[in-house]
Length: 117
Length: 113
Image (cartoon, rainbow over the protein chains, first blue to last red):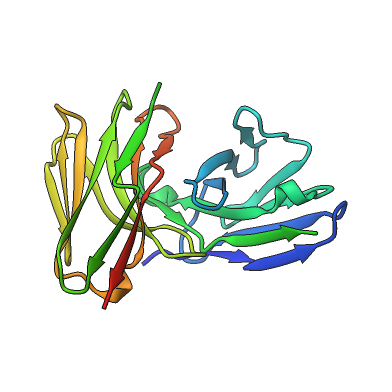
C-alpha cells in the first residue's frame, strides 16, 4: 500500500531555534499534502494545505511566517517551525493525497513528536 | 458549523468481546465518511471509507455502517484483540473543492486480557 514517511520521528530543540520536518510520499506522487497538529488527547487539527509548486494555504489562526511550508517536488513537503517556543511542542502529522487516485485517497505519515525546551 | 462527534470518549473491553463505536456528523455537503485507527504516537491508518450511497463496509474484523439520512455512522469491532487498543477517529469529507477532512475527537479503546 501507499506509504508516507516523516523525518525526524521525534526532535527536541531549544527555544528560539528552528526545526524542519520532512514529509515524503514513497511510492506515489502527491500534488497536495496536508500538515496537521495534534495535542494530547485531542484530534488532528489542519494547519495548512501544501500544493506542489505554489504557496501553501493556511488555516485561520496559523501563522504562515512561523510555520513555513515548502512543497518543491511531487514527493516532498517540508514544514519548518521557526523560532520554536515550548507552546509549539506537539505531534505534527502530514498526509499526502495520491494524485493518481482522486481526492478521496489520502495517506497519513507516522508523525513527528516535537519537544521545545 | 461542520462538526463530527464521537461516543463514547473512551471504552474498556475484554479481549474477545465485540464493541461498537458511534459517530454523528453535521457536515454539509457530504462526500464520504472514513474511520481511522490511530495507535499512540503514530499517524492514523485508514480502516474504511464510505460514500453517500454505501451503508456498510467491512475490513476484516472491522465493519462500518453509514446512515446518510440521520447522519450517523458506527464502527463495529468483532472478537477484539489486544492490538485493537488505539484511538478510533471518525472523519468526514465535506466534498468541497479541496475535499476538506473534518475530524472527530476519537474514541480511545482499551482491550484488556
